[in-house]
Image 1 (cartoon, rainbow, N blue to C red):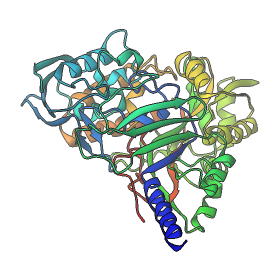
Image 2: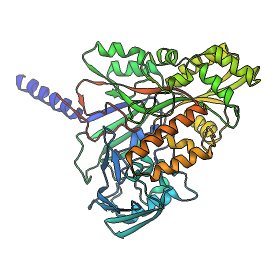
Image 3: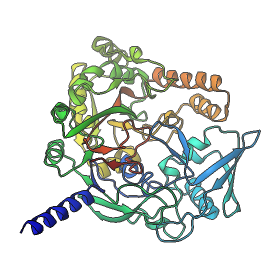
Image 4: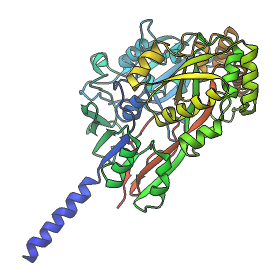
Length: 485
């Protein structure tokens, strides 16, 4: 009897240890598809970036640009020719070889006239992509661009195979350390470790991304042990409960997420009205009320942790009297605007607060709560809105203001020229000065009302190691994640 009991205990201990190579990650939003080259939703990259798909370069947890499928690269003296040396022996998950022709295909596809890539502007400087041999790619630019390595690290620039590119939305096939195995829509995505990965094998054998939109349900799932981690936890008001519980670590970091009250500049054309909207908003009240104090006020579309950030919050400080005066000067009486809110907590809670603040200065809002797919279709693509709230989590993305057809429809030729010049300027001091100028221009034009930099509020089992503290890009990179005992 003692022998049987001991054997049973050993089996249980072995099973417990085996379970620690699995992880279940909570996410509030389910991705609309799983192809990072064909969608704008941050939730796509949160599942597949660095896990399933890889680019020539990648972002590290500190925001640095690191080698990925390219082990090295050289840049010509004039800065217009980049030559990438690819890693050898890399295979896609279907067993086919990844080589220079796949890189040519992927980048030409991303920059094609009919491309559906959400960040097509990343590839505008590329004049040609050539395969010099199976492991060497030459990219020729129309003008010098010191940002090419940075641009190619985005999820939108991952390398895909011609044979599977059209089905990546539902059955992603990449080169990463994890293989897609299942997507139960409305519930979860499952990944398993890639046994043929070219690089160091991850410690995890299986990863499940579980979609839980309700903050209360997210709290309960973590407390019950149904989730191992929630890297972007949607209920900051409950973080103190996790801080007091030794089973958990609360991980507070920064993100690239500029959270804005987006304004449709094609509908609200008078800068005085946009300025009035900005002055009607009490940023700290939104941070406190919607995010329970987590967030940093911003006055332009730039991350405060960036060394080139300019603090312009005072230019659009909370001033209801000034807001009312500006509306009177603009002749904007009885103004009623449509406020379209996507699912994130910062948007839904923040929207109610902003609606109240706008009402105080005489602007009524009609709130519509949209699901993520609806928001992407109606607001992001259709531009059918007046106001919206969204966090732009892409890194260093002030260049979106140089796209007149972007969803907030800001069209300033001088700003567009400035962004072009930034792209071809290699002198660090000059680039810094121009980036500061760019921040000032969009603040002066009150393109949007700038709210706060989104904090990364994560909760994880205290035994988990290797989750990113900060979010230099929108990712749940599991390559370095493991369990300690």
